[in-house]
Image 1 (cartoon, rainbow, N blue to C red):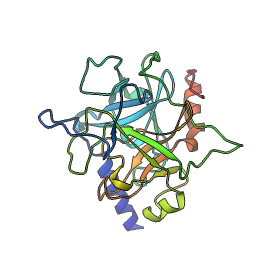
Image 2: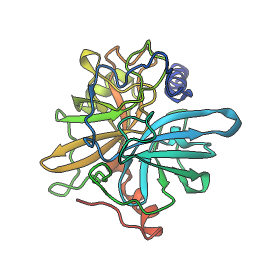
Image 3: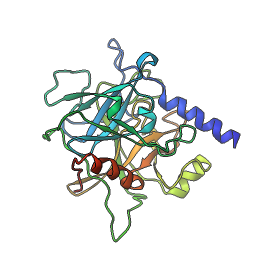
Length: 279
């Protein structure tokens, strides 16, 4: 038990440490060994610059799910004083990028799951309510929440899913990237993922294979894991944690399973009387 708690504490430190934006003299790339995103390719992608007041700030990802709401990780927002949410962005360094919008939110608009536990990363999910109605464009459009198939939610095991973000490109990088990248990898069977993580992975989590050095990394936390079926894009995960040994070592990347929190999401969204996307 002590060993597992120590491992999770190390993972927590690895994924939640404040990550600087970029070094302008030596720009570092993004998700490890990922592909460069085209403009408008991931219109649901949000970037979040999170402020903790005097304690500093960190960078995370998120997913737009309606005109008002963004889903991200609890470990990104727990204790936050405020945040700046980027929508429609490919290059977050370019304030004049066409179609890019930024929204400043204070802590009253941040909802961290009340049962979130930093020590185990359980219930690693939070919501951000944007301060004004977001107009959808070709660069800003929500992802759909998961839906049941024949009465139950798919596991997505062995199907390919896409993770995206501005996180570090390699274990050697010291900054997040200004440019969005993505990886497409298969969802790992739950039983196999648990073998890697010695019981740290619950049914409320979903795992992605990270072969060939392709993975999420520091700065991608809270960002989307999506499954595409025809013209529909379903948000199935929010980036939660990975191995403290590095992003390129082949350990599965672990995400919060969105289908496990639909009731929690709807409880907050319905109370606000703002619609959510159910394509």
